[in-house]
Length: 267
Image: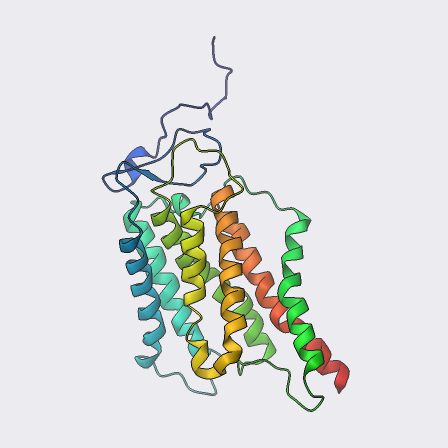
């Protein structure tokens, strides 16, 4: 049967990006269900190198603040250096590994189409932060653990941190982990190994909070794991980083905005 004109996504068609990856890596046939933006490899699934590389990037970003001295009066917080290094190195590695095809790492719309229900992901952290604020004594500050102004929080935590951390965890790491997925596999209700490992890695990025928050950091770390799983699942199903960044931003907003509202109501 003759193919219809303009039909560019037929199952079994060889991907034009086949030569864009390092040796041993390939893409599923275009049109294969559930594999948008996911890589495959003829090799067995070996997550250790991917996790080691992502950990090295995270540590380099964390300790980069020791090399750059930012004045306390500066509008740019120290986290700006951390996330700038994280974003730059992650994107650079993705560029090298895919030979310039960042769309293979989620920098594409993929199959994602914005729907209002995604905004409901603001609720988990909003509910928890509201309950914690209500339970706190009336004289206790509700500005959160980060000493930033509201404009700084919006720009550097809600937005910039979300983009940078998703570029590492769901862009670089999950792309490398997903090369072990099966070609043509249909979406499953079960969490795949790349999703699980990406979520756990994201949670481990917040372990350092134990030093400043003590036992109170445990719920934050668990929430980070949950966020990581949700964002990774969106990345896997759509092939895009956009919904992952949106969900990440909503979690950050939900964690702080109710505190601001309650603090304002108490004044």
